[in-house]
Length: 248
Image (cartoon, rainbow, N blue to C red; front, side, top):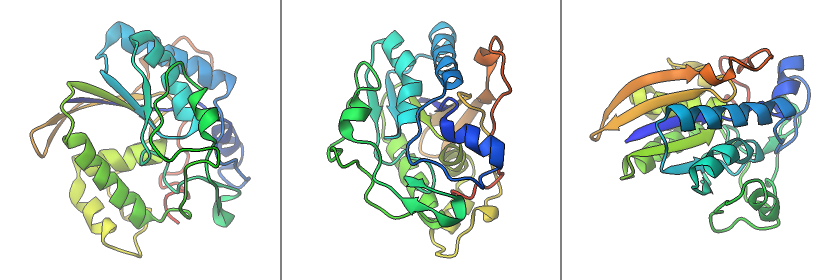
C-alpha cells in the first residue's frame, strides 16, 4: 500500500509558535490561516496532477487537517474520513505549553461543515470528542504503534493521512525504526528526547511511503513541497526538534 502523509496547512497556532517559539498560549482547535488555505489548495492540485491518487483520505478530528484535506477530497470525489487517533501529540489543549489545559475539541456540527463530505466517527457530538487529559510521551508512542497496526491491516492501494507535524514524525519513526518507539511505549518516564529519529515536516509537505508485507517500508520521498514553489511566503517548520506538546 502506498501511504501519503500530508501535514496540515499553516494554522493560527503555527503563526503564534513562529512568533514566540511556544511561550504564548495557543487555542485548542485553530483554523487555517489564509496562507494555510492557499497551501491546502496547492497540495490538492499537485497530488491530482502528479499522484499517486489516494482512494481514501483520513484526517484527525482537528479543524486544520479537515480544512487541508477538503480541496483534495473534493477534487478526487472521495469523503474526508477523520480518525479518532490521528490527533496531534499532546491531544486537544490550550494555553502555554508548560501550563496546558485539555479541551474537548470542536463540536461535530462544526467539523462536518469544513468539507463537502465529512464522515465523522461515532461519539463525536456537540460537546466535542476528546475525553482525555494532556497526552504523555509514552501514550503518543503507544498510539503511533496502534496506528501502524491499523495501516498494515488496510487493503487499499493508496491511502492519504492529513495529519500533524509531531504525530506525523512519531508515526514515521514507528514505521521506519520501530524498536525505540516500542521501548518508549513501555516506559512511563518516556521523553521525546529519547527518540533517535525526528522528521521536520513543513506545512502541507507530502511524504510517500510504501508498506510492503508485514514489516518492510520503502521510502519514496519525505517532506516534499514542490507545490509551494509559486507561493510567496516563508515555509513554516516545526521549530522544536522535540515539541513541548510531545514531551510532557
